[in-house]
Image 1 (cartoon, rainbow, N blue to C red):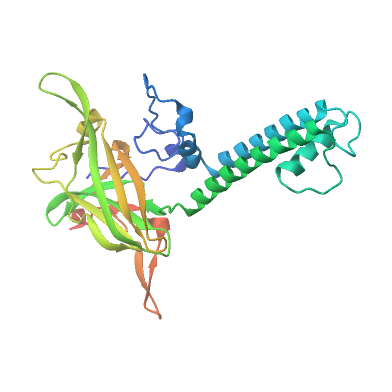
Image 2 (cartoon, rainbow, N blue to C red; image 1 turned 90 degrees about the vertical axis):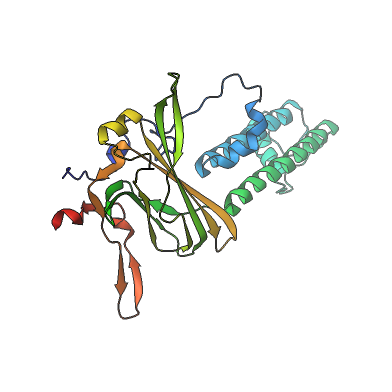
Length: 310
């Protein structure tokens, strides 16, 4: 029996062997650079901002907010005696007057006096309306977008089940709500050489014993039978390495709370595949209320295959 390899630790995951098509962390992210595209990046700015993290979005909002107020504060500063109750030569006063104008606070202590100052105020109010509308739309879109909270096992196993080798992986829903009509697709990506000698990377769909369940609330062990029609038939570890293999998993379903479609993805490379191993059980019946406990802390754990114990 092959030695059972333990799941990758967080430190090992950050020193992964190669980039993944579906990344698990920032260091193994598979980057794609489009060369020769005539489409400008700023035309998809809203989509880029929507895909940014909350931290990145917050820092960008702060930067834009300070930049706008600094620019209008400079305009007020250049207008001599344009703002009442501003100390002569004080940029700080006109900066905070700009903050009050942009945010429509209006304490009433500082007010525009001249026509030029009022025109700048008018321009700043228009910019403030646009800035508020854009930030509100982005924040609402990010909050309202349903996100799946699905945890996948760090490893996939190849073991004998019902007398035939199977590729197995496991996943579970971290939320208490259910993902209705959950469907999963598993594809194998590998390097191949065509009869003409061209090297290419191709996807091969992996047939599953069950690709759909009525709802996902507990855990789900996904199984691919490695029969004579399987792309993994008679494949060894060395074969998988030569293929530069990556197994891509895609889950879709309907979030019961939002009534919207959610997606989740994961991938496995050859170093994530354990031979002759089974997943340990993560579910147990709870007494006395006859409930079920799902131990997500053990979803990655494997043990030697039972077939070798007989």
